[in-house]
Image (tube, rainbow, N blue to C red; front, side, top):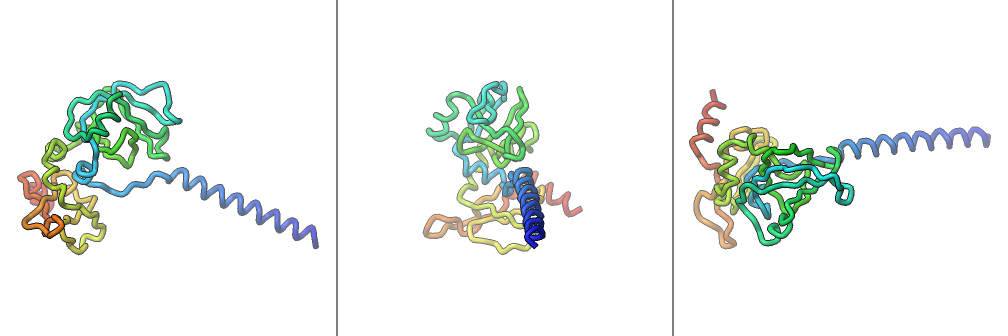
Length: 213
């Protein structure tokens, strides 16, 4: 009887350890999950917006994280705090993808909109050459006009319209690549725009027209 109980206890313990191992493995491989973010939101929330060239990857780690040396080529937005942080021209990122680490290419230009020098897969770090002309102009200052508005992800396509916001379907290319959300008219007492809409720029309208075809 005692032997049977010990065997049963042993089997349960092994099963528990295996289950725990699977959970830990899943949590490790899937640890990096990010909420979608429009380029305008990244711009408005950032302490700095720059275009930087990656000079090299440092052989030295910073608390186990990779360090990249960068040279700022264009500066679109910069708070005094960010200016101090970027003074040494460094970006710090986790060492692996599962930890949201970035693998940056040497000599490549990147558009970066962030709050400090610690960046990762959830940060707005994009190859400058991959941006559309609208995104490039947006980061250069056009997005600033829409900062009073909010861009709210909408996954059903039939979300309610909120005051001072534009609904955004993350996989909708026109709003993602060619859209900027701007105030329409009037403001509430707290300064919030009464209404916002996607700016009907020529490229945005062309994209919408092609989508309907």
